[in-house]
Length: 127
Image (cartoon, rainbow, N blue to C red; front, side, top):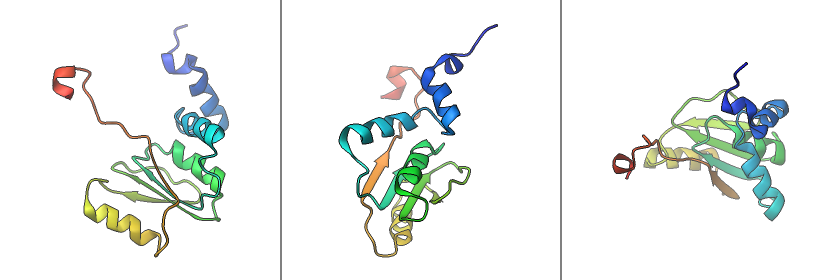
């Protein structure tokens, strides 16, 4: 029987077991464990949020009813408890204005982003 690389990856399997949408959740969990990054955070913005694993970590850590978490991405995402989703381009002023309005005059305590540009794998083209 042949297994895909993802299914052999311990973090992929563990993420699925714990209900995270992607293995990248463990990056934010590890950073938080090492630096207490999310201590005292009530309001958060997750840029380039899809598929939503960092938003899940934020929701679990902050609590779905204790603050405001805004997840922003070009792609639509499945709902996450305690997370307000905004579909938009983070390079546009209109998206920034929409994020600001969702906080109703409050400031975000943290902005996180696990985004990466789309690449072809051909270094001359991807520059």
